[in-house]
Structures are given as C-alpha cells and as structure tokens.
Image (cartoon, rainbow, N blue to C red):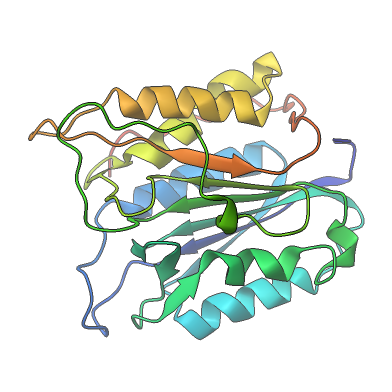
Length: 246
C-alpha cells in the first residue's frame, strides 16, 4: 500500500479500565502501561494518536462514527486499538454493554468512510474472548479468525490477543502479553521494513512461548483481507524506549 501521506493516519486507542459501575468483571490491571506503550509506538510510526478512556457501549460506537466521519484523504491508513474485557466475537463497554467486532469495523468500510476506500484499516483487540484456559501447551491456530469476523469490504486486518472462547493473560505491572509483544516487535522490525503480517507472525510466536505460573498458554490470532503488503516507512526519530513496568 502507498505510505506517502502527510500523516500515517489516525490511531484511536479505546482503553476501558474502570468497570466499577457494571456488574461484570474486575478492572483489568496493567492496561495503563499498555496504553502508554501503544501511544509511544504508534506516534513514532507517524500516527495521530487519540485515547478514549472508560467508554460505554454507546460511547465506543459514537467514537467510531466520528472517526468514520473524518477526512482521511491525506492519510495512508487508520488504526483502532481496543483494550477491554471481552466475549466471543466482541468487547465490553465499561457499562457492561456488548459491542460486536463488526459494529466497530463496519463503520470504516468503503461505504461508511469513502476517504478510507482502498486503504488499510487495522484493528488490534486486547480482550478475553471467553473463559477457556489452555494448560495443555498444544493450543493451535492457523493465524486466522473465523471468516464471519471479517467485514465484507476489503483492506481490513484484525489482530486479536486470543482465539474465540479463550482468555487473554496479563501482568499487572508490565501489561498484557499481546500488547507487550506487539509494541516490542513493531519497534524491532519496522526499521527492517518487515510487513505487518510478518510482524504479527512474530508476535504470535513470541506470545505462544509464554506461560503463566500455572503453565497456561495463550496464542494471538489475526485475520486479513488486505490486498497488498502493509509496510510502514522507517521513522526518522529514534526508536521509543518502552517502559517495562508501572
């Protein structure tokens, strides 16, 4: 894909931490450091980063509608990152409201956002997708989300921290396994002109080799119908120094 715009694109980070008003899960520890790392890395890549914290279901959908309503004609792509609790095929607002992934992606398709037509639309979802835990060490993935998760339009990539039905692990002081690895590998491999799909394969390999104190494992997955390689230009500034703990 061409990467010669005035800016790389908008990067919206939705960071849902305070679930105290809902009857759902506890506040996700370590999400603040995930947000900080992502802001550093995507700013370094040339994105205009904006953060929405503690969004309800309606606020999440409204933020996507506002993003779709912007003029992306001078941008190369768009990125949307969601840090939250989740369920199979979706994520939660802090009010406990369910947001299906297609409710987020559909707003940025070629019909909903014409100025993004033919440009990469990148989604990164850090959230559990269920309650299953893998302790066998043989959790498998072909790096593909179920096809119904993909929007009908082209140029989408959706990377998720864990397969449908499974939990996603985190470290309260260092952040989640998926976001840690994503940020580290972007910083390490973008200067080598690796394409995004190849970088995500390294993230999958990295996270799948981790185990928690109970020997449980996790493997991220991604699906894509992008038609070309996504190769970010090498940033002119120095590589960001990523914090290792809160």
